[in-house]
Length: 315
Image (cartoon, rainbow, N blue to C red; front, top):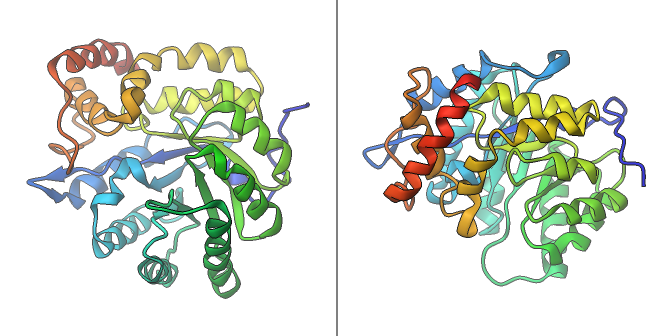
C-alpha cells in the first residue's frame, strides 16, 4: 500500500500537524489560569513547523480534564480560545457521558465567539459495546454537526472499537478523523478504511515515525512545552516523507516518552511537570502538580533528570 500523503486536498488537512495536549497547571489544588495563559503564550511564540503551519492546541486527557468539573473545563476552553485567537487551532476534549452534561458543554463551547475548531471525543468510561457507542456518538456528533457545522475527532483507546469508529468516519461528514491511542497496526487498518479526506492521527506521543509509516497524519504531543523545536521537527520530517530523519529526531526524546507511557501511562502528566521543574524553565509554569497525579518516585526523577539535560537545547 502507498502511504504517501497529499496534505492539500482535504478540508481537514490542517490536522496534519502537531496537536499539543496542554498539561494544565495547578496550584494549591486549584487550576492556575494565569500559568496556563503563560504556557499558551510560550507556544504561540515558539512555533517551528514548516510552511507557516499552525499547531492544534488540545485540551484532553493529559490536561487532566477527567478531574475538572464541567464549568471549570468550559472556563479553560474559553480562556484558551481567547488567547490563541486565530494563531492556532483549538481542539476541546469532551467525555461523552453523562450524555446531557456532554451535550450542554458542547453547546456552550459552540456559542463562544471563538469556538473550538474540533471536539475530541474521549474514550467512554464504564460499560458499553461497539454498537451502542456507534449509535450514541452518531446521534451526538450529527446533532451538533447539523446545527452548528461542528466537527469531531474520535479517540480510539481500545482496538475492538476500530470497526465502529471507521464506520462513523466513513458515513458522517462531521467526523474529521480518528486519534489512535493503541498501536501502529491500528493506524494501518484505519488508514486503509477511513476516507482519504479524513485524518488518522497518532495519539501516543512524539514517537510518531512508525505510525507515519502506516499512514498517520499528524500526532499528539505532551512534550511540546518542554522541547517544541524537536516535537515540531519530527512532524516536519515525516510530513516530507523523510522517515529516517524523523526516526533519528524522536530518539532524542524516546527515553522521556518511555517514562511517560510506562505501566499504563502512570507518569504521563507528572513526568512532564517534573521535566519542566528540573529544566529550570522560566518561560513556562506547570504548577506544583495536579489531582490524582503525585510526583514520580526518586528513581524515576533521576531518570527524568538525565533526559531533560539532553532536551534543554530544544526548549
